[in-house]
Image 1 (cartoon, helix red, strand yellow):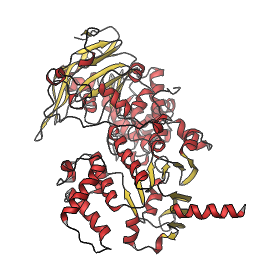
Image 2 (cartoon, chains in turn blue, brown):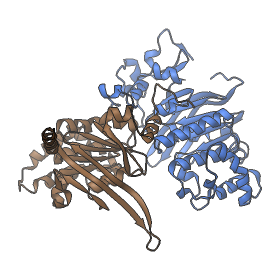
Image 3 (tube, helix red, strand yellow):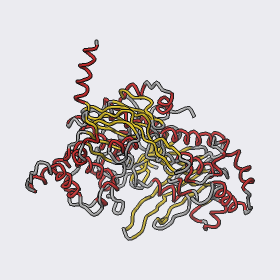
Image 4 (cartoon, one colour):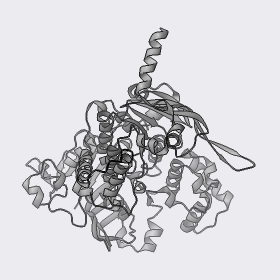
Length: 335
Length: 279
């Protein structure tokens, strides 16, 4: 059981989610436990297929087939969201306490409605009131201006916006009701560098102004997470294998997978040219039949016999938690 | 002085694989009230043997327009392109594609889903053999496929006899690189080759491309929006904005000491691991 404090915004305990279908059962999220404090920006990193997006979807309390919730608890601001029925979840949690920005911003907007018409629909759902075109403009002009978005966006259709603009519009809409927790699934992956920077600046200003204090951002790009997150969780094969303060994980990675992930990055730095980069060897395991023991052992350069038979326990090292037998000596304290 | 300049010029030309001069492409829409959109404007550069030149820019800056003109997929509005000093229009279509080859962004659309990998490679081998009328035995071909697949870090048994959907994106891009090894083009246009594959396997693909350029002395036009990658792989970098090249030069100079305002802004937006932005 993870320790909770007054300041805890989100507590996840042994959360599991599988994809069930004709392809078999994919263990996409396999027992994730996690605490996020108020005011924290947590990054989720890992290769594609490691369970980042599935974890975020499970945190919203909604799982559409083929994804199915298989147990565990998610406690958000005092609401145990997997024990609530959908109506209650929608009225009490979604939008006001929790907002989710999906990977593709194009899917989040309605292609046949102007942005303001879409927002009017959303607000009607939450408040039960009808809004005129001018009414919506008045309400949103300030919010959009604070976030540095042009108010003309309101009168456009989604296809008229550029990718970066669309992503920022979706973030602006999802934070309008000032949710306590904002979940962002790969917000920067489809954007080029200047739009990436603009989006990160916008998230930072939302955090600074206190609109949304707590965020969880998933990305495969550690260098973009580095710019905004205080903490980082590294996911592999449906589990969090390392979690700690951003600076600690970057400068002193503990898990072999974190080290490999850091080594596969291509930042714009002079040393990349003189040192030959390696990239990740091997490929992630088939999650229909995850390997026994530590799921990383087939690719790990430092594996021991125990790694192949027994799952590593969570070990505390400094401020970080790591799931690896190498760090499980006398110095490590079991949790 | 004039003499020295002249000599340098001729030597330069001998190694020059591709040269484009004020290449321009406008897109027009509408008949009465015509709207002009700039695809590329006044783009000039050259690529030498064994050299990697990157075209870097945001989406919509005209990188892909330039590459499609070089691949003769679209016709330029104006401008000239020379391959080995000869106008590209003077080449026979097949001859042209024996010298110029491309790898595209989306590996899933680069393959015919009904063909196994062997056929992709065999077609490539046949394509270069037509001229010489040389019908070598299947055994020999098999050997060639295997060695070229091994060269790009693939296990031949893992990919031979398989359909494209059975392979991962990274494997597919590497099969395409192996195909290039068989054809041995003198110029390779690599258009956003890593954007559809996982961040962790990108480096492997880039290393293979780098080796092609170094060992086979292939000229490469590498198109990307990822500036870190551009620096890692290229000898020279050209930064594009709104269809124009705003800065071109050695990778070191352009990316670490940019001169134009746009290039400065672009480079400053690249996130790095060890520095945090002022937010």
